[in-house]
Image (tube, rainbow, N blue to C red):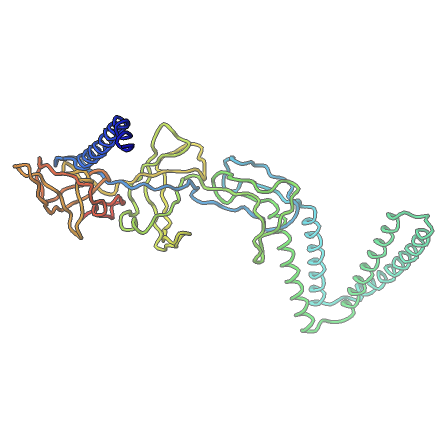
Length: 428
């Protein structure tokens, strides 16, 4: 009795709930029917031009880049160019301080002169007059040597008591050193003058002369290398060191440090990498149309100049091959390192039968189209496809112009892939 009374009171609420459920079920079915209808669309086989293009992205580089290094070390004295300057072959790019290099040259010259004199002496010996003169010179040098020693002792004593300066002490030491060197030199010359040269002595003198000449030539070369000149025509791409910095020479297997980078900008390259899927598609000499990040008003033509024969796997394990392209027009001031997007036409077909790629499905190795028959039914036909631009695909056989087909999305796993020319929509 209570249940009947509750049911009577609640009948309008139950009726309302039933209506809502019915409406929901109807809506779901209607949406499913609509989705099924939308999944099947009719397409007509039509003639059109199809162009297959590939896009690559790389960065702008100079035709060649040279790391400017010094062949002699020292302190960087001057850098008369700055980044962006145009330079010509032979132009001065930097200068190393020459003070120490000139001292080294003078020392090498003195050593050469001494070796030359020794060699001449060994060849012809000394006369009686020369020996007498040298003996007198030795006595004079001995007197000067003794005076220099006495002077140093005197200055040292005063210095220890605080009556002499550091400079006076250093001068006294220098005077003694010069006196010792002069005394030793004149004694050697006297010895050479008193004795006749043996073949062995003469051979030694000749070797010493050659060695001193080589050292002298190297000292001259080092002084010349203190001025660093450009080896190419181009632009200064970067300046790495400033005046006052220490320059490490690039010699004897040492890398040395880079003073600046100069690039040959007579040609601008685009460096990129391509995957294995494009190795058989792209080839050297193909035209490229570039979009440059800093040029908004025009496309820049170019071409592929080199595709490497050696690939390396990237961090994802995909084997990539370096590719080089070259711009064919002047772009003014290049922004090296900036991004360049290149579009390459790899194949084209004019006025060919075509369908959208979504109208073709795959069954194993076959390409299938659902053709609409005259009575409204459909039949599956095997078609041969040609090139594709990603949206449309060429129909080589199996359908005629004007035929209608239905694109069926109900089995996406058997549909065409969206790959770049190597999938089911590629040449067959």
